[in-house]
Length: 171
Image (spheres, rainbow, N blue to C red):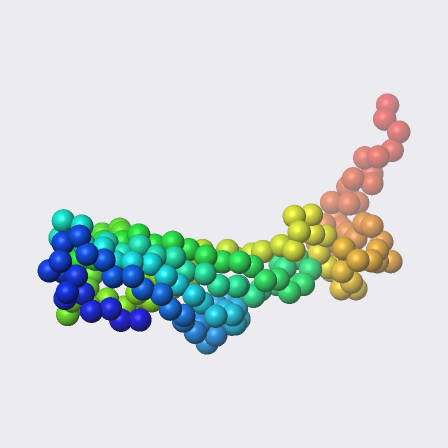
């Protein structure tokens, strides 16, 4: 949503509210397309003492899977933004300042990156998720597999032999 700021720039104390939706279904994140639900946003731009300030929030459902057992998850994801809008092109390198051109601002260019920064690298279905068995692939949260409780890593076989020799009677 592009907002024309010309009227607001000349009206100290004025504000422009905004709200809308964005389609991020084509957004590739970590090799998946997790934004299948509509993304909604709202906020306002205020002129306070000739300083333009955009405050807004954005919300969606993030579709992913548990990092251990691969069950599908739906995560409520939201973000807030509070930035100063500046006509100075050099303001790009300053935190919380967003440069504008032609007295217009695209609010999605501010809010969508704020939302994507809230995405975690991994999510779990529950804190104590047991995951999948590395041998048979069964979900350890639902069944107990018959692969055995101790499955030694073949790279550690030499260390296991050393430990077996030390477990004899101690003198």
